[in-house]
Image 1: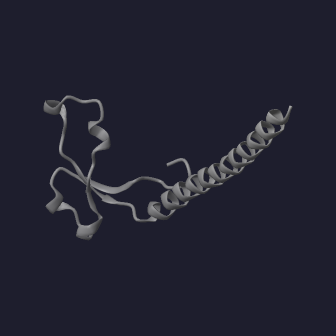
Image 2 (image 1 turned 135 degrees about the vertical axis):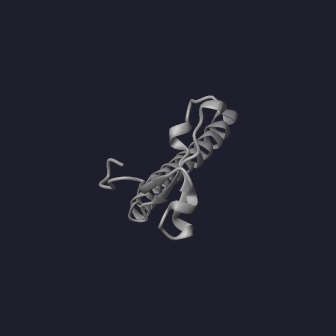
Amino acid sequence: MSHGCQGKYLSYANDASTLTCPKPQISRIWENNVNLLVQDQKEMYGCINVGCCEQVKTIVSSRFSDMTVGCIVIAIFLTYFIINHQYMNKIASRY
């Protein structure tokens, strides 16, 4: 990751039973199989670097916060435009 985390996995192995990390930290490495045919894909397992989890959580939550603020601003503008439209229809119907 470019945000300070050195690597997603601490160690790699072809068999999950040979890894020495705790079982909840063992994960299948799927990134190496992207855009490969099924017969070319390799089964590999790795120990997840738990130190990266907090950084990923921070990045994802900040992006959701930005999106939430954007949606609230859009909703306020939409409400304003609807009220303005109703007012203009009322004024136009008078004349």
